[in-house]
Amino acid sequence: MASLKEIRAKVTSIKSTQKITRAMQMVAASKMRRAQERMDVGRPYADSMRRVISHLVHASSDYKHPYMVTRPVNTVGYIVITSDRGLAGGLNINLFKALTNSIEDYQNQSVKAEFSVIGAKGVSFFKNFGGKVTSAITDYGDNPTFEQLNSSVQAMLDDYDSGKIDRIYVVYNKFVNAMTQQPTVTQLVPLPEGTLTEDDSGVRTDLSWDYIYEPDIKTLVDGLLGRYIESIVYQAVMENIASEQSSRMVAMKAATDNAGDLINDLQLVYNKLRQAAITREISEIVGGAAAVS
Picture (tube, one colour):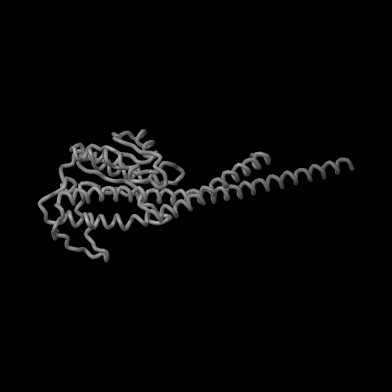
């Protein structure tokens, strides 16, 4: 059994760790609020872009952008968005599980996979997991610009345009609330048929109409699809950042609470040992006095 000195040293060490985890919890809570605000600001724009693009997908027009045309799938690409730092509970692990499940489904169909990674944790994962990583971005911070992320996204789109990849997915953690983050695998291109088939009230709409395009349909659609890709990927990064901070806040709170429980348990053991030592000393004194008398 540990001595009183060893238990005191353990309690002191755990208290020091508890101070760190409590500070990290408060920092993560502050960052989560700011990240959630940035995420909420971007959601209406991303939803509007989905709605506009969905109308174009279902419109009856002669011009079909390559991103609107489905082709046989021989190779799929994944844009994997992870965190740069750890200590975020099971956030990245759950995301990798969703990713591997999707990869296994395609491997069963003899379809190859390529990866474009955003985040240091994703880079570390693929070093062990294997797989063809075409590009990687790390240290993108808490409030990145799309220019920081563009090289990784553009590399995947270039492979799609050249025919090396036939389908691209975005993999990220969707922020539901402070306690829930949902690993999400979303098809980016070609545009899925169900990009958006509901209006603001949640009622399904008929999207079979066509438009009058100015200056011309190709210029307009090409520009809109570029904006669409940017908005979807950037919003996914914002969602993942908010998820990261909320998951870290919850993980650090759990660590702080567990440290408190461990300190209480050690304190109880310490008190029992101390009481036993005092009782033993008293018994020795009484026994000695009786022997002398």
